[in-house]
Amino acid sequence: MSEIKIHKKLRRFLRLLIFFWPLLLAKLLVRIFPLKRLQWIIGRPAKAGSKVNQNSRKQQMAEKTGIRIYRSAQKMPWRSVCLDQALALAIVLRLVNIRFRFHLGVKKSDKLKAHAWVTSGGRIIIGWHPDDEYTEVGVFEAWRRRNGE
Image 1: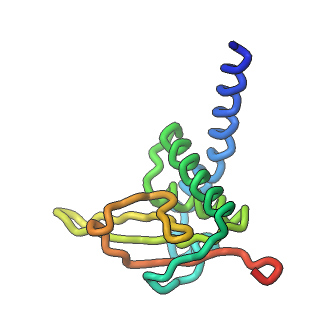
Image 2: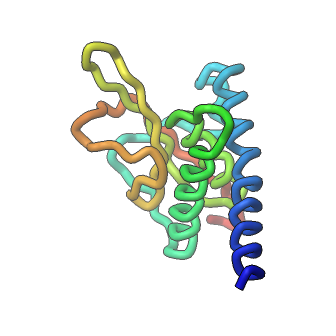
C-alpha cells in the first residue's frame, strides 16, 4: 500500500517539475519583453469569433495540459497570473503541435483590469472568465503546420 502512495507522490512531483519550466519561462518573458515581441509564441492576429477546430485526441490533451498548468501554477514559489499561465500553456501547446487561440481582454471597473486566456476547439482551456465581464481586445492564432495540416 505504501508503495502505491510513493508512486502517486512521485508522479505528482514529476508533473509539477515538468510544468515548472514553461511557467518559469513565461514569467521571465512577460517581465523582460512587451507582448508584441512574444508573437512568435502566441501567434498572429486572428479574427474574433471564429474557432479553431481540433481532433478529439488533441482537444483532450490540450484540456488536460491546461488543468495541469493551472494546478502547477498554484504550487509555484511565485505568483503566476493569468498571462503567465496562458503564455506557459501556449509554449507547451506549440511544442506538441496543438492549435490554439490566445485571447486578451479588458474590464473597466474602478480600475482597468486585463485578462488572458487560451482556447482550443472553441473551449476555454485556461483562464476561464464570465463572457460578459471582459471585452476581448486581441485574439492571436497559432499552430505549427506539418504534413499539409
